[in-house]
Image (tube, rainbow, N blue to C red; front, side, top):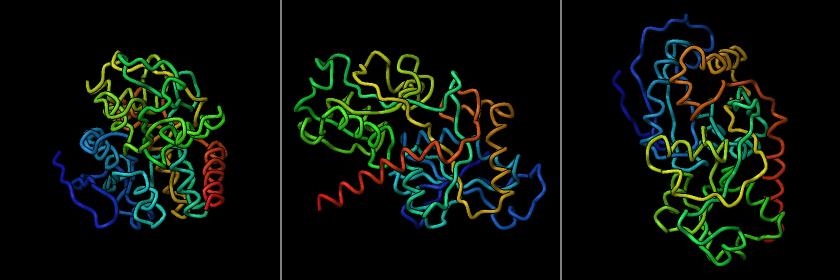
Length: 310
C-alpha cells in the first residue's frame, strides 16, 4: 500500500492519507457526511515512529468502515485538543488530562468511546519518575537542585497527576528541583535523561517491571532504550488509561460503528490492534465519562490556582 504525507493548514503537524480501497461495507448516512475518519493522536513518541505504528490501521478502517483514514499527529498535545474543539477532527486518542482539556474546551462536547484494558482487568496505568541507572539518585529527596523534565502541560502522567501527587507530598517542584522544563513529550523526556540533559523525568507504563504497554514499552520495543538504562524512583497511584473519545455532536450510528471497530480489533486484526493500543492488552472496553472526572477536577483546580496567583 502506498502512503503519502500532506501538511495540514492548521496547527497540526502531519496527516496520513491513503488511497481509496474497495470498501467491504456499504456507505450509510454518516459515511456520506464524513467521508474520512479524522483521527487525532497525542505526541507520545516521535512523528516517524507514530507514522510507522499506524501504517496498518488505514487499511483496517477502509475494510471495516469504507472511509479514508486521516491520521493527525501534533507535535504538542494541545494541537489535538484544539483540532477536536474546532471541528477539524471527530475522534482523538488522548490521555486523561488531554480528554479533560478537550471536554472543558468544548463545553462537554466530547465523550469516551473505548479504553484499552490491562491484563489484570484494570483500565489504569502509572506515572513513574526515573533517572539514569548509573546515577546516584535513589529518591525524590535526592533530586533537590537537580534538572527535571515534565513531558507536556496536557499530559496526565507527564505532568498533571505527578504534579498533584508531589504537592500532596509537600514538594513544590519549582522550589525542590534546580531547573524544571517541559521536554515536549515522553520520548523526549526519556532520551533527555539518557543523554544527561535532565537528571530525572516522568513518563508512563502499565507495569513498573514488565512494561508491556506505555511509553517505556514503546522505546524498549524499538530498541531505543534498554530496561537497565534507567531506574524508577517513584510510582504514582493508578491513573485512568488514555481514552479514544469522539465529538458528541456526530451521528449516533457513527459513534456505534467506531466503537465496534475498536472493540473487535483485537480479534479481527491482532497486529493492528497491538500497534494502535501501543502494546499488549486483552482488548478495548467501553468506558464512561465518570472515569475521567478526576482529571477534569484536577485541571480545574490547577486553573483556579493559577488565576489566584495573578
